[in-house]
Amino acid sequence: MARVTGVGGVFLRSKDPGAMAKWYAEHLGVVLNDFNGAAFQWSDEVPKGTGMTVWSAFPEKTEYFGEGQQAVMLNYRVDDLDALLESLTAKGVWVDPKRQDEGYGKFAWIKDCDGNRVELWEPLAD
Image 1 (tube, helix red, strand yellow):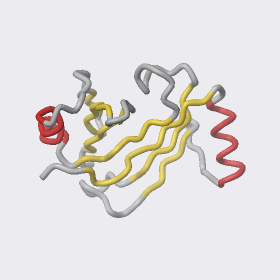
Image 2 (spheres, rainbow, N blue to C red; image 1 turned 60 degrees about the vertical axis):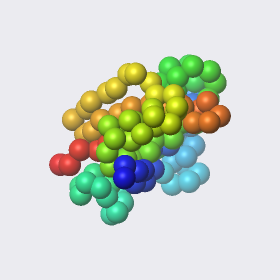
Image 3 (cartoon, one colour; image 1 turned 90 degrees about the horizontal axis):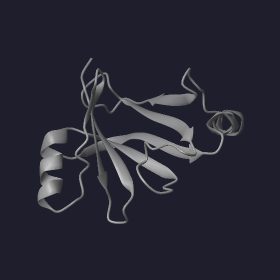
Image 4 (tube, helix red, strand yellow; image 1 turned 180 degrees about the horizontal axis):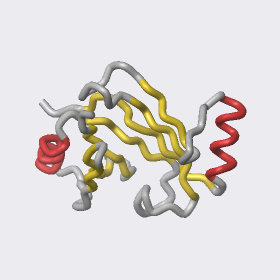
């Protein structure tokens, strides 16, 4: 069965993403990388070599979270994006027709029962 295999990312909307990233670095010890976010590596990975959780602050007016003022968007790692989307569609879940294929995985978006936009990511093996 297609399923979520972990949290792939936590994305926060902010009036000043740079200041928010610096606050997390200063107060919580988050080690920032060149995109002003962080990548937390982990070992329970599917497929092997792809295990990480990304943290990133986004501009307050980002359209990446979809419409509305949703403050946080979760990214869930999945093991079979196409099968999961087929199952969700059959269950009446709203699925964004937009898809994104990158060198590190495939992405799709859905809305949960409260209307929150959720990102689904199937990572590609190295």
